[in-house]
Figure 1: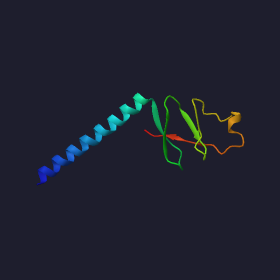
Figure 2: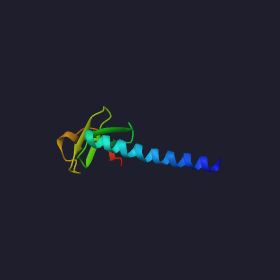
Figure 3: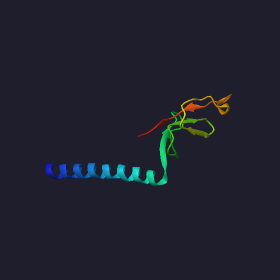
Length: 85
């Protein structure tokens, strides 16, 4: 029984690894990345950006510049998001 259990665990680990690879491959094809805003959870946004901000109404801003000097941010409740790996 121990050998069968070990085989099952090995198979499960292999499947889990393949699932992660497949998910990443599909995200690459779709050109999206997963971001986390800390409150509303995870969201897939267009890939190719280094920084993102979210607002409670479901709005997002993507940028390659870390600066929030844009007038878009004035009088708004924008929060930085983190990219999930």
